Image (cartoon, rainbow, N blue to C red; front, side):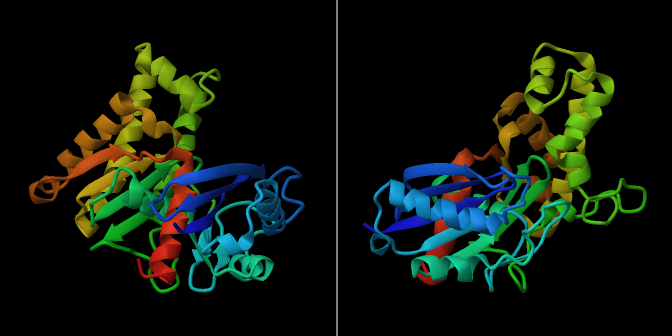
Length: 309
């Protein structure tokens, strides 16, 4: 059975794993990419971590069929380089991920955006198996997205497509975004937007965990904040439903475990906000693969691109 090297480059850590052709993760590890405030270029750290991972686990390079990389940022998947980022991420833009790893390991390499990979991973072996039209959204520090239409990942001309967080929902009167624009959806729909609003009310509500705990306890202030936040998420999604007519909306990120306080309200609000024909049969559910989604999806992207699976 074929085995692949899956690498998932995030803003703080790189996850590494061996994934087989059925989508099972056989081994995994992790290393920080921000250990010295990004003084060491992210790609340098990734290359070192990848070599150490294979060596420590006694995995010969020749036993692997290829390397699939999931990476944060705007990824030119045709060239396998980082084309851009939003915000302060030093020593990362321009990183030639594909050519560097091909040079290191002598294996074919594909590189795709992390939210695209999350969506593909879920389509392959997660919550979106059997679906052909899916909008995948990750809620975290920002908002990432991946769009599957007619069974194919929507990538656009350079592989940069599906950048849902920078869809503008408050273009005329919105808050400034790290990308330089105003009113981007992620400024309202990211988990950080919820935390920012909660902190203004109570400094103890410092993260999603604390906020949802207060909501579980019935705190009226937090419940009102959550109601407003899920409105913002649902309105962005409703616009996308009218464009892409998906069968399924998949919500990922740490907060996606909140079925009653997050997934169910979003589902109800999206369906109430779209034209009736678009709501018919539309499902909204939480992603399943959690931390493995990026590397699993990266391997699936490799198989689709290089092996036409």
